[in-house]
Image 1 (tube, rainbow, N blue to C red):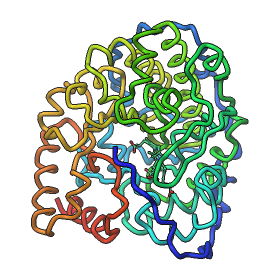
Image 2 (image 1 turned 180 degrees about the vertical axis):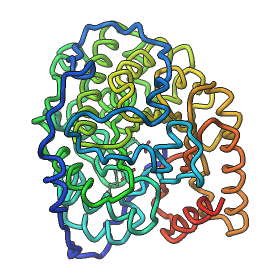
Image 3 (image 1 turned 135 degrees about the vertical axis):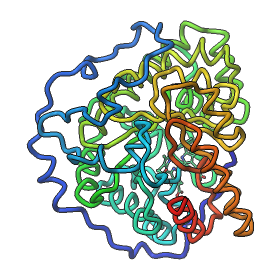
Image 4 (image 1 turned 90 degrees about the vertical axis):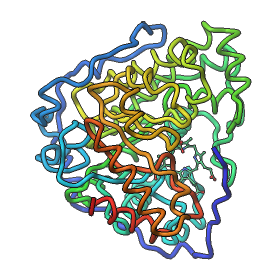
Length: 413
Ligand code: CP3
């Protein structure tokens, strides 16, 4: 992906942050019964999962019962267009949200972040709540995405990682040998109390808008850890994968445990759906993806079957869509390179699709943009379910007004 400098803007950090008073009360009484997903995944477990069935019929019908005392908002699954489309129901209007809708293009985000390092903002429930809400107020999308970053759980277990503006995550001591892999311990809920607090606060603020939780998939996290930062060709990562397959699977096993635990915290706090970002999976051949990556992603996604819709997304994955459709997600995110109807064919039956307007289309003249939005809608209508999105994250130069216009175009059909 392109790495673009984010201008912190001239703001003085004067934007105010408030937490919702109601969220805490909503969430306080929850006692979850034991579930399969609570069984600890431990490194060294089986990695033989490759073709998991889609969610069962009760889940698709929206009839799945919430855990007693869950903070999740009752009734939302049956009414919210985003959640209905994830279940391959056909809502009256196509739901739309934007990857990376929080931050980057909003002056109120830049003002709030002016004096606050990225990872500090990701560990402050009041800031998480405010930044998650900013694009919801501006664009009125059909879903909010929790403000965080894919490296947050790795920082939470003690790794020294910084997010450098204009660069991305930078790892102080890259993970390249067995001793380094052995330091990757499991994530406990107490490592990320700010996540639980922020989700609960958001449930009180969001009204009828669903909240998407997310995490980085094992391969994408491994690439950052092995390379030490963003990488174009993932050379050291592939060298480890091919050269030391046993160590590779140990690394991805541990990352799957951490990722599943991070998503578990978000789901237990009440998020309505989760997205697993395998942003850099497109660097792999299909054979390598199936051999070295898919079992670990499948293991993460299988931990939440029948609980909330699971979205799985990567960039440049045209040749991987069939394989990615088999790791157990309910919705497969598609970048802008493959038309959605063809993508749905490759993904196969039993899955909804998400995507896939070229993020650069926001810079096109309005009639061209409108035609492109219409084309995505028409092709998406041929899939079993469609959530409109960009084919990758919002580009920093994007005019927020154009994003609001896209929401209107999608809702008008
Ligand atoms: O979608 C959203 O709006 C929710 C927030 C979100 C962020 N990161 C906040 C963020 C999400 C979903 C992510 C996921 C993420 N982070 C991914 C997967 C998605 C993708 O783009 O493929 C990846 C690969 C990362 C790692 C990462 N973090 C990168 C590559 C960068 C960009 C660095 C830069 O300066 O451009 C970040 C930083 C980051 N994460 C920002 C935001 C809002 C910008 C930080 C800033 O404002 O300075």
